[in-house]
Length: 178
Image (cartoon, rainbow, N blue to C red; front, top):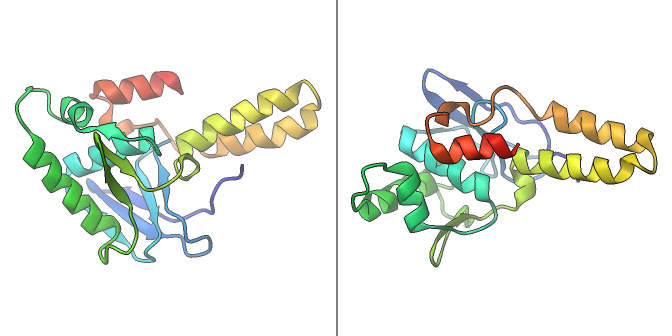
């Protein structure tokens, strides 16, 4: 499984810039370094709040699976209060940012929670794991076939994974798994 094309998303000044990836028309979410998203829409988008960035990263970590609302609330709000309306607000704002025309199901409501409407291959951490697993299978047969996959996997890394969320327990677990 190959990586999607290279977008030019940037992170700076506490703002995420989301760039378009027009060639393949698929969203790409990068968490192996500062969080970046290459959108389907073809426009640069700034995602406004730290909560929305963390919510997107959490959903990306579990893509394409559903993350329960309880799990999301527990991960994003440590006080244990009732934050369901806040969660709905942030989901709505993320949908607006990622797909302003609401043509795609970028974030899907599915009991018991939400999921990203992208496959695991759209998230660099999942592509990394798949490339490493495939290279391990090939290594016994032909190291020459495994090496390019490992090089591609390492090329996905742009810095510390989930770096913006290092304080969050869910992010520490994801980093440990990598």
